[in-house]
Length: 545
Image (tube, rainbow, N blue to C red):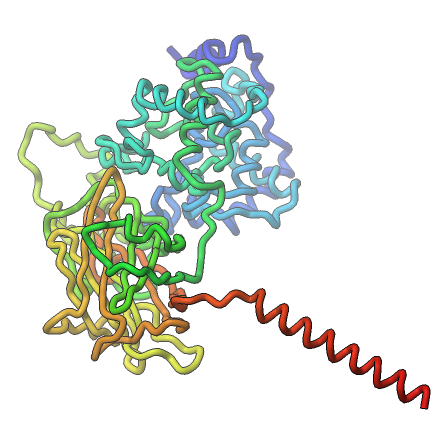
């Protein structure tokens, strides 16, 4: 069956009779104007010919869209159909969250349309009337209810979403690490607990549209023909119930709460019930060799408590699999050949590596025998299972007396850092002092203990240390302490400088007794009022004498 027949058949099955839309290609002048914008802002990633092979493409995960195929993820048209001009304009304006495709809010509507017309010129399908279909009409969203979300859980299981997205939607299903797009590149399932990372948008309307149309070119199918509208709304509501908002609500302050009972690591997360949760964004380390442009973890949750003698931190982040084999260390050196493997693909350099760090086969190579022996890794590629997951807390060796903090990449020669590091294959805590990525020294003994647990796509790691120790910064009530974190995904071959990290945040050690502001405010108000009465009395007395 031809693609045109497939598109029309899909539209009829899902949405009933849908008339073909006339090709909307714009004028020569509009496409020429779009070509200038494209050359300036887009070709570096998507390529001069729109084939997704720009010179920056090797560094990007997911890879830039190949416009020549006519396959686009975010659309208001049916499964397999081409997007409308408005769809393309919307994606350009909004961007693709948590990818290298940024939003372009400063483009005028005319510029957006010119760019969209030029993007259409890369695929001949846009000029074929049978391939253009009218956008769908989506129903008005019903009110969200807990009952609808509960019904959506069953739909979630029945449709197999759990196989990719996991039991709690954290992107940790058994198929998660096997997924590839239509071009053979690895692709991650969405994490429903962090829906602000959704490519097509986080709202219920956005999710319902995606459930209806699918994401062309990816393993995410369309459910418009398989599920009734009420079922699609139910699974939408279930997905919404798994997260805590359309926005991440990133914090820069972590508040350590006092607890009366002695901190017991065996209690796990329950010990931190009174502490507020701070979500910190994770960014890639791209400043020094061993770069990680797209760390798998998007954010990390941090809570802190302290008792009479100790302070403890609970650190949580989502990971599609627990890598508890191999080893890890902040001091491991990433071979230069590993970085060059991505930069030099197709030019005689070491083979390109995929999103998980494995050597990616040549585009025209014959498929590997699934029953054969595993091939040896390509030059510059690490062996599978070589590295474990890991996490570290970073603190200054000495509290800064001014605004300057140590360099956020493991400190500097003037201002060093204290690293609390947990290799999650071993579970024990190592402590390092560092004065830069090339000057990391392991301490003979660690003042820090830890407890780690992985469950349904989430790592939970608790760090515990005395409030004061001979070689570390003190955690005094009422004080502020700079703090940063690093997370290593062993499945992506992260180690050493190749990691995700946070920038410096502040830890506030909240005093045990928090004095209410009401009492002092009332006293101050009464004092000011009394002074005003005295002044008025004095002025009037002067006037009468």
